[in-house]
Image (tube, rainbow, N blue to C red; front, side):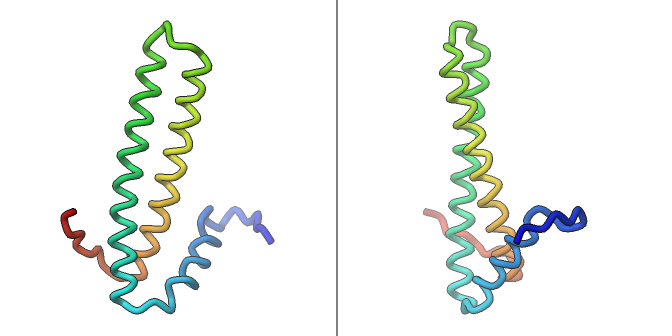
Length: 106
């Protein structure tokens, strides 16, 4: 059941569910998952920025079709949403792990 309590943060229920998932993981497994999440988060940041730049360029180009601008806006919004979701998961993993692991190159 969804809560309408204004005192509760937007991701509170999600955080509780993640804690339940991560609770049983061994430290090495949790660290590997966190490293993977860091890589995925970094990629999502790059995708969101690329989508933003494409949208801004289309808006600046007056001959750009409105349908194309709308499509780029949707792509940008989706990329931003994905970025925020990955950030929430990553934050929970780091909290559970207790530190930010070194991410090997490659």
